[in-house]
Length: 217
Ligand code: B16
Ligand code: MG
Image (cartoon, rainbow, N blue to C red; front, side, top):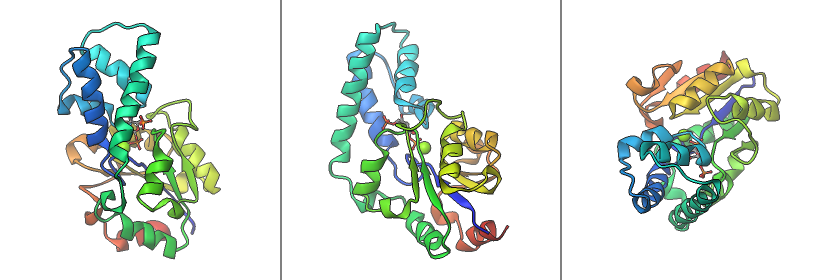
């Protein structure tokens, strides 16, 4: 049977979390807020607007909407400088074979990301042609753990939520998939992603036989 395979972007297909971190750190430094790599975990899968609020809360900084808008623009401009040189080499290990396998098996593939920069990243890494639907931060109003992004993706592929499989690296994303009644596959650490139905350290640990089983379920 046809299933919908929905991929998160940051942390699943590419490791852009490190660039988000560097860009946010620059803003935090300007505001004299101590912002660590550990704090950065809180921002995974979270929208840009919400990310700024979390950082301001960490530093107990109150700001006007005007200031916030300026920092949001500044952060994205800084982030985009890291994407300039991005190419296929940034695709995380094991992802391409899975995408290719799904294509060969004629399975519908979608992106379900909170990022507003998803399309240029898929283009630069040369994998945009794998995706039958792209749902990103420009298409949704409710951020993960709200299931909106994944529900729109499954709908765009014409597949019922129960027949959708979601690859996610963030807690909020795994929760969103579960709320949507989809099969959640956590990519990362067991202790963080224990709510996922299946957990793999990364895509090199996912065997194609496992994907095949999901397709035939
Ligand atoms: P942007 P994902 C998310 O992408 C990131 O995990 C999160 O850290 C980021 O703040 C968010 O995208 C928004 O990104 O500033 O590019 O719109 O993991 O849902 O693919
Ligand atoms: Mg992610």
